[in-house]
Image 1: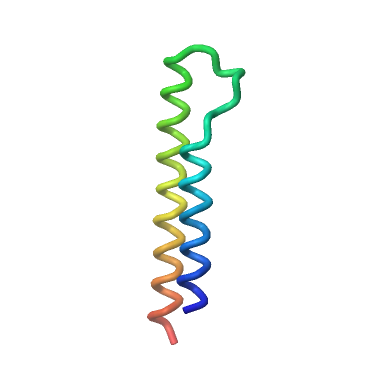
Image 2: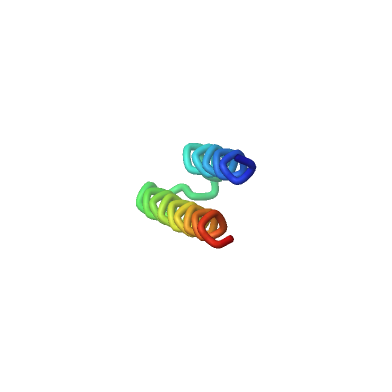
Length: 61
């Protein structure tokens, strides 16, 4: 139950971070698109590992 709450909070944080507009320093649309995709990719990777850690934590007594 506690782990699920942590996971939910992490997911919301990641979603917020992904949807939040990037710094205005990224003027070129190409680099902005690329970095945004990269951020999303990294966030998903992080979330994936978080879920895996959580799952193993639940499975291992």
